[in-house]
Image (cartoon, rainbow, N blue to C red):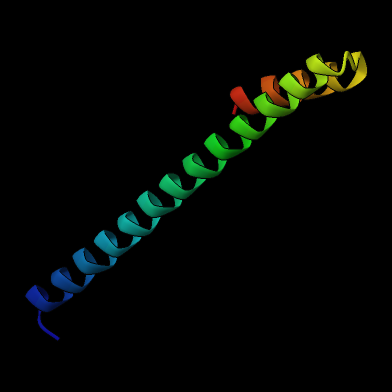
Length: 68
């Protein structure tokens, strides 16, 4: 393997790793968004049913998720 091939192989590895990281970030963001929407629905349900304990639990979960 000559120097050019070694550099190309290293670049291909770098690009592959970068793509994998980008895909992971996209998936993490989608999961976070989905979980936030689900928690907001649960908060709404807790308010409708006047369930203070559930409301506080879900809002705390939502705050923790927003801080990530």
